[in-house]
Length: 230
Image (cartoon, rainbow, N blue to C red; front, top):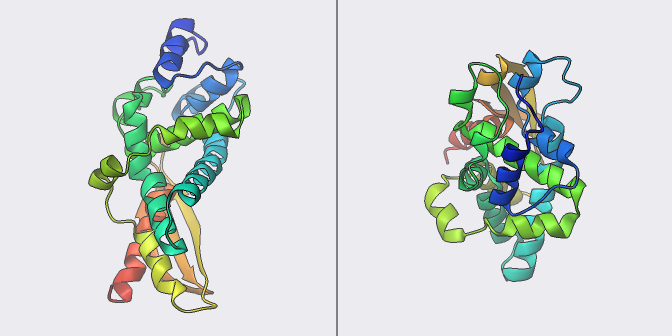
């Protein structure tokens, strides 16, 4: 088993991100992939998925506040801009900028593939934000996040956001409500498969499959748009 608290490794990563953690356990937790934890059940620390949940919220709020203060557009435009900056593909680019995959703790057989898998890196980036938030405060994390917001870079590399497009279509009809539900999750940690359904009110209008919850939601939205002829 690797030394999770090896100073050289953690110090090197902290230099890359320009932030030094007071609580190293939070940093280590953010770097723990589920495959590693599965192979070491007596580790005494969970994988990074709970931190990912927290980081996702911090990221969304940071982006929303920044756009509200700097972009003089209506809600629809702001929603599209935010989607561009917080989607899985954008987070993958952010993670690559700090070589995040090199520092994640993976289980055997997962490291080579996992280091460059978009879903894995985007999730770990959100986990890092969650850990940083718990270690400091919202303003510190927001300042870190804003370093990555480059509209030109993201715009060139991020594909169409089907969820945003579907939301814009539905918003034209007042009273209609969209919701997404992950109906199944299967496969080992290194090769997960999520199945998602998207509902318009109580009616299922699309179904999608992906290697992450976010990609499955995108595929469900894509199918819904196709069924609508869009």
